[in-house]
Image 1 (cartoon, rainbow, N blue to C red):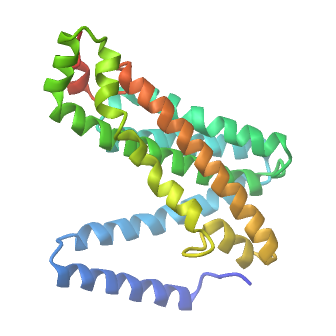
Image 2 (spheres, one colour):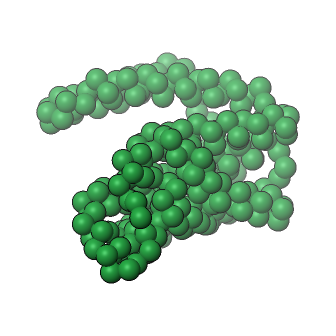
Length: 252
C-alpha cells in the first residue's frame, strides 16, 4: 500500500486546511495567516526535499551530505528559537553529542543498512528530536535565569562558583525537556503509532518489521535527547550556550 499524489490527496489537504482556518477564526486565536503560510511552506519544502532525496538516495556520500545539511538547518532553527544565535556552535555541540553516538550504534551494529534510503530517514528523525530537546532546554533554562538573577548573585555572595550558581537554578527545570520524548516512548502502541511504524506498514512491511523499526527509532530518540539535554545543561552552566543578555548578566 502507498499514498500517491493526486486529486484525492489534494482534496483532503484542502479540506483539512480549510477546517484549520475555520477553527482558528472561530476560536479567535489570530493564527489563521501563520497557519496558511506554514501549510504552504510545508508543501514547498516537502516537494523540494522529495526531489533532493530522490537525487541523492542512491549515493552514500551524497546521502551523508544531505544528513549534514539537515543538521545545519536544525542547528540554525534551534538557535533562533532559543534566542541564542551567536552561540550556535554550542547548540551544534550539544546536538552532535546526542546524534553521533546513536547513528554510530545503529550503523555499526548493522541494525540499519548502509544505504541512503535507510540512513536519511533515521538520521532525520534523530536530528529533529535532538533539535527539539535543545530548544526545550533553552526555553526552560533561559527565562528562569532571568527571573532568578538575584538568586544567582546570592549564590556568588555565598562563595559559590558561577557554574554552581547557574546549576542550582536550572538543574531542576531541565529534565522537563525530556518528558515529551519519554511520554512518546511509553505510550507508543497504546496511544499513538508514530511515523516509522506507519511508514513501514505503508511501504508494504509486516507489523513485526514496523514494530522493530519503531523500537529502534524510539530508543535512538531517547538516547539522543538525553545526551543532548545533559550536554546542553553543562554548556549553560559554563556560560557557553547562552543568549547575549545572559552572557553579559551572568558574570563573576
